[in-house]
Length: 381
Ligand SMILES: CC(C)(COP(=O)(O)OP(=O)(O)OC[C@H]1O[C@@H](n2cnc3c(N)ncnc32)[C@H](O)[C@@H]1OP(=O)(O)O)[C@@H](O)C(=O)NCCC(=O)NCCS
Image (tube, rainbow, N blue to C red; front, side):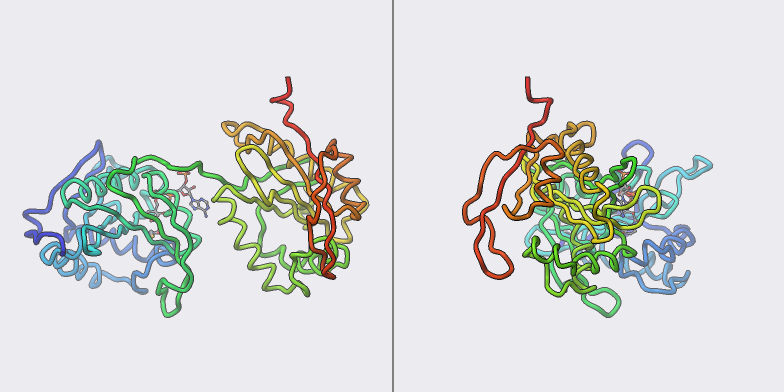
């Protein structure tokens, strides 16, 4: 059942919170609307038509938006906030689309001049109040193209639970894109439900761990095909192709946002050339597993030791200071991988156990894994 029919603009509610107002769209919004709809970020992350002009803006304000209110299919509000001269101006659009059975999907676009100011968060909160309190909604759904972090952060702030990535679902200018989805239930707290994990750049004197970049792919492929990497990392594809490097790189930000796994490009602090990769393939509330590999031409300089030191420091740094707050860091190493064992021992790890049948090597043989760990000095007293 759609929302009730509403006379436009007479019966459209005007909602306000401080300087930010939600109100019906007006013809004098069109100029700002056109700027917003020609903006690169808007075009990248929404399906708003290309070549947006005043005629399209006028059609939106005088036909599409009123039709949504009258037909009960969509409640779109203009967001209004003070401009540079302090006078209220069009700052974006937020909308709820009827999805039947007391469910709606949310949509929002901010005018470029109003991003990063908290205006959209206030606007979204008012829209959600309208949805849950006035429309009696049960659940609000959020969709975004995968990679739209600004959108994801905004809904995270207002309490949405991230539901995952849906492959090949969103229609994006002629192709089917992967989409992120999330929901907010009417009884849900309107505050973050999880920590916002991220991939900070960890700078050391000689090496730096930073998020992967497309320019790293070529050296990741070289390293991934190296004989030692292939031998000791049996889960790596063989051969390691360019596509594998890209898939891995794209997965790293999503994995980090879940807070379960982190991977960084290990680069030379001066030249930014890729030396290898370091990561925390598993993080729990207590432990952080550390992993590493080096490009063959970066071996023999102690870079892996520097990298592990950086990661351990990050793992042991309390969460309120930007670290992972782990009580314990550990590595799992094939018992015959002496180069890797040397790195861990040099970084102060001690053997604490042996996993029987801990790994299946690339040739199919089953081997034992040594586990070495270090305990966070902050919990040793
Ligand atoms: C989505 C949108 C409305 C959010 O507006 P906003 O809340 O004012 O916020 P911002 O654009 O400044 O970004 C929000 C947060 O995301 C972060 N962010 C932006 N891009 C990011 C990225 N690539 N990686 C990580 N974080 C990112 C910002 O740093 C900001 O975080 P902070 O507030 O902690 O500093 C606005 O970015 C927009 O209009 N985008 C284009 C249209 C769009 O994407 N609509 C949503 C479709 S689902």
